[in-house]
Image (tube, rainbow, N blue to C red; front, side, top):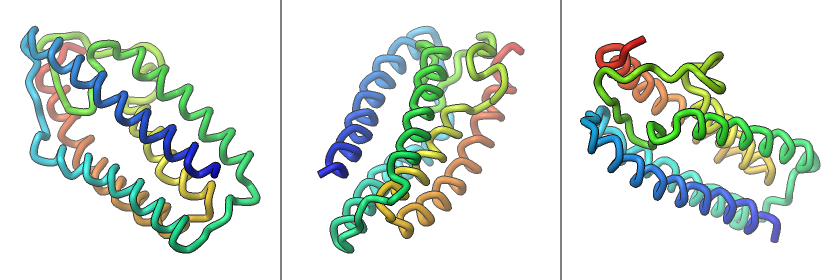
Length: 169
């Protein structure tokens, strides 16, 4: 029963984020934003969808019980959500699931961006590890941690190149 709540929460969160991203995309494109990394974006979306599918199959198919460390893992997972929303709020309308850069805008250096270049990516990496560990879904945790590392290597390189080329520091 608890897995329905956890998966439901994070799936709803992702869907709401997609709606916010679409709204923000319209706003920043109206002021000249340029999109980068469009070719890898569908793979990232598919990876996240695959994550939830793999999690459900592993937990239900293999009848995985909640971890005996469930509450500790959940506390850490909830703490990451504070960082996620802090990062999203710090970027405001510049936040997006796509790489959209408004030429000559100032680099955001407030909130968690004072210390980390990509705090939301750190949060996602932690989530892709902790959510499966809540339910002893080790295969999903390992597979999607590796897939996400590959995706972030591609994405961060693309994003850094775009930011360095088009933003004011």
